[in-house]
Length: 424
Ligand SMILES: [Zn+2]
Image (cartoon, rainbow, N blue to C red; front, top):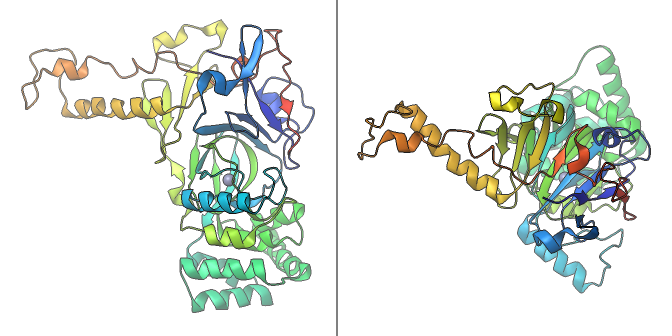
């Protein structure tokens, strides 16, 4: 086990309090993200003895990037490319000689970037397009020339392709800030009298407070709003449009920084690239149901090769040992986060045991046999949870146990403040 020293990002949407408090520190400089992994734009380092060395030297190149993310206001409206688009885009920009750290650079590596968000606080995000009928309900409720024209276009050509065409029109035509402001005012009036359609109007009003006149305000009307409670997770596959709104989460993704943005940001935009990357997806498909793994661990493993996320309960030192009673108290336990292919494999291996339980074979009676004559006791001898109790590779802990995330002050060997990277 190694202590990590991680790069932090101070993007303008970050929070001054959430991540410091998560790490058990007082509020201070804005921190939007802390990166844990081996991505070249923000590699972690580890302490080996008294020497700090790159994480890649002890762990190799990791296929995933793991972040803590804390947003005080909406992040950019964005899409991540699939594998073939990432490869082609990276090669094209390399051939064009665009520097890897240039602000206008879109593809900073040749990898796709599926990602999953695990909420640490109530976490609001926009993800995927609403169904056509719902978008029409939203637009029909806003009596402005812009929204009525958008609704007419969508009625002519409904479905995913029609929605993409609507977004493309918004991104490529000159919609004035006055037109956007008019839509926001109507939304505000509707919200004030208690009228909304699945929180579309209140979302537009909230976003406009930070980005008045931004076309992302209008596009937000077409997107599902998803609220994750602490402990819930959502998977954002390649091509799914999304914009995180507020809250703190753990984000795990393929080791990539490829983002195509269309609004709600001061960073470089690539509206045409974003439209080309769009793929069908809805928020109801985004939630990830965890697999129970033992008595105190849940494994979130969306259908990607690069990562899975196991979240377990552990006890603070003062109560260490109480989990041996298999009744960990939620109020006294902190999440321990692990991420590896190994967990995916172990979670898969855990499934047959539950099948065994459904058969109703006795746990310890060797006389019970299955249809092939195998003694039931063999299928049951590995009690659920036994493997989960083995030590893993903790990457992060919640307040009070922050020593696993950043080399801790208690070790006195490394500056406990995360390094603030300059490319934010
Ligand atoms: Zn994203």
